[in-house]
Image 1 (cartoon, rainbow, N blue to C red):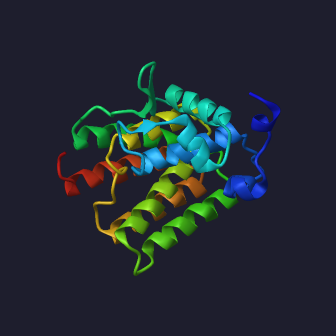
Image 2: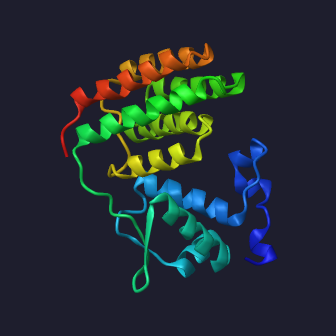
Length: 224
C-alpha cells in the first residue's frame, strides 16, 4: 500500500467515527462503507464487486478498495474467485426462527460484555436512538435503520471484534437485516429495560433482557 492510500481520512470524510477520535485508514473506511451496504441489502447477495468501479464510486485508488475487500472476505461477507473476482456472499438459506435463536445467544453475550464497559455517553446515545424510534411519523424503513443502529452500537460497545464480525454475518443472512416485526411500542419498552440494565452495569440482567427481547419477536415473524 502506498503512502497516499495508507493516510488517514480527513475528519469530514470519516464522519461520526472521527467525532469519537477514531481515525480510519482509507481501506478501513471503504470496508465500513461496503459493510453497511451489504448489511442493509443495498449490495445484494451474489452481486459482483469490481475494484475499479468501487474506486471510482468512492473517489479513491484501487489499492484501498482491494484491501477493504480482503478484510470483508476475512469477515465472511465477501467471496473471492480467481475467475469471477469478489462478490457479496450468498448466505445459506435457513429458517428465520433458527436465525433469531442464534441471534439471541450472540446478542445476549454482547450485552453482557458491554455492561461493565459502557459509559454515560454510550447510555445517552442508546437512549437517543430509542427515543427516535418512538417518534410518531417515522417510516418503517427509518424505524428499522434506527433499530439496527441501536443494536449494532451495543455490539460495538462489547469490545469484541470477533463477536461483531459474527453478528454482521448473521444480520447479512436476512434479506435486509432483521426487521422490527413486533409493535413499535413493545420494542421501545424492551429497549428501555435493556438500557436500564446496561446503565446499572448488570451483565446478567442485560443478557436476559436481550435474549427475551429477540426470542419474543419470533411470534410475530413469518418463516422464510
